[in-house]
Length: 153
Image (tube, rainbow, N blue to C red; front, side, top):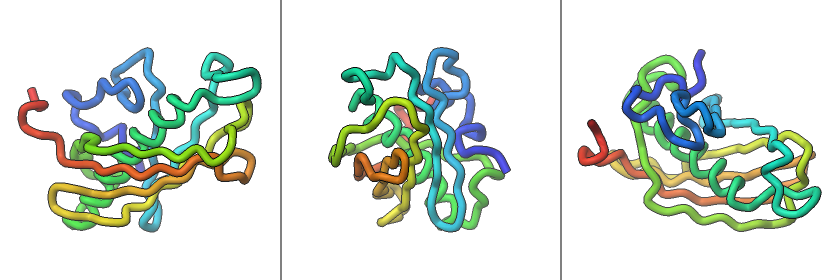
């Protein structure tokens, strides 16, 4: 089974956070399993806010892109498709909220867990946790909507 972002249509595969066609991007990869999506990301030294800690904007970007993939997977399940096998529909962010619970250490791999809490035809609400070394460092809530036709080429 492929990662969700691997199956985005080429027109939507250029995102800085998760686009496989963006050579300079973060390349967030999300895997759908049992009603939740998991991503892992190893911050590089240049993702620093202060010595020893991850820049908060990176955490926001990671949760944003992972939530969008989670929304797509949840909408696929609702429609009877298989996430990670069938083409992934594209969603965009309508709202992003991040609560920083504790400083995120720079060094360990980050685990990002996401669950859809509301799945509609056009809108999906996703809640996420960013975990480092077993400790939850940030929580996020994202409202994702289907990409409007004005964004499709």
